[in-house]
Image 1 (cartoon, rainbow, N blue to C red):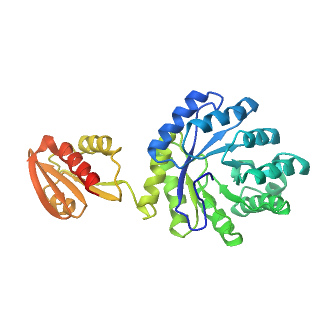
Image 2: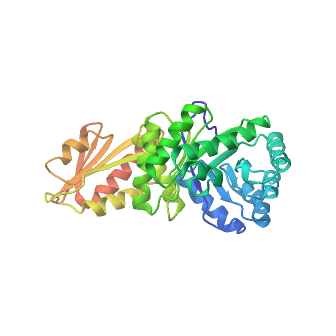
Image 3: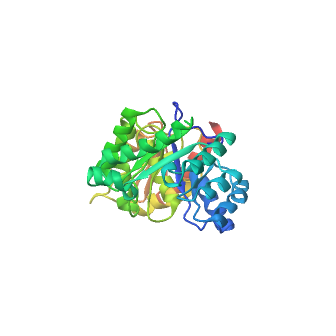
Length: 345
């Protein structure tokens, strides 16, 4: 997809979808740039009409990550998106009309080496498949996806990714397992309409995380109701927690208890804000703790750790106490050490 590889042993990528009106070029570009800063590697844009399709080219010129057009029903929107220079396309060939129309789209993407993602959702299955299975089961999702794959394969097109998303986490997991057994195409993982940040993060972490831990999945999108930057942050954290993302800063902080002698929540929030844009060449674990019982020991096990209490702060690096200072200097000292780490490494 442009310069980003998906599948074939490439690193698992994190993507998102804009929530602006694609016809509003300025707002859409601004949102994509925020996503780029957050670490988004692929972004999808809704294309509800021809005006939106014709906006894609100008948007593409102003951003750095690959853009994917999201097309439903109207094959003419797909053809225009291709002309505008999109890097990928999400389309289900079975719902854009006759074989002639499908072939027109396939011929166009072939000419420009544009991959297609077949995206099946539990809420939009074909009526005959729903009648066959009685509900959007995992088998139903898989059959729908493979039906669309067959259409493209019959036209000698195989540059395909597949998603089989459901709002039900267990159905989502099982449907991807079925697809993974039956095909070698790259898989785009996601729990569709996962919900708000809290519940959506939980559902996505379980669904996406379970599959990735089994070796299933090549690119992911966390679907949250809210700012898409949050989707990217959660996605990256899922990869980090499984050891699939090897850069950036991982913060470890204790949950807090009656022994706390410092405002730990304020400390963590301030640290997250101030270190979020520090670019490091390798993954770094930062421990932020506020307990005189466990704090020093746990902080010393991180690459860099800070612990505080009773007006005093301590900074650890690679298991050794580096220096002590006043409690109100904790975040300043942490930032200073991370910036030094970035310049040396």
